[in-house]
Length: 147
Image (cartoon, rainbow, N blue to C red):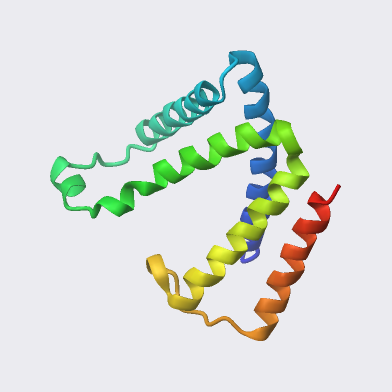
């Protein structure tokens, strides 16, 4: 069971690549990348709503919501940007090219967040081996995207 923290991110990566293909096909069916992103989020929202009901999660009060700093609601905005960007770019440059760049960007920001301990991440300083690993990933993204 202790390996689940390693297995879940890997499986998430598999599902994100699949989601990109499915959402790209939805884009062509709806003839609109923004409508495809909206429908995708709508389906996810309905599923999450059903899970909340089935698991009988306590409702959030308006006072709780008002007490939350505004930036903490940006996850939905960032998710909408990500899904929309993927829907737009996958048909143009392909899944492997897009996700090589996505992973390079995630790694870059993840290292910065860890180094400075931002957004609640534990502080974990950048060192030469991490920089070298990141350079390999970024080099791989370049090679994958090279025509």
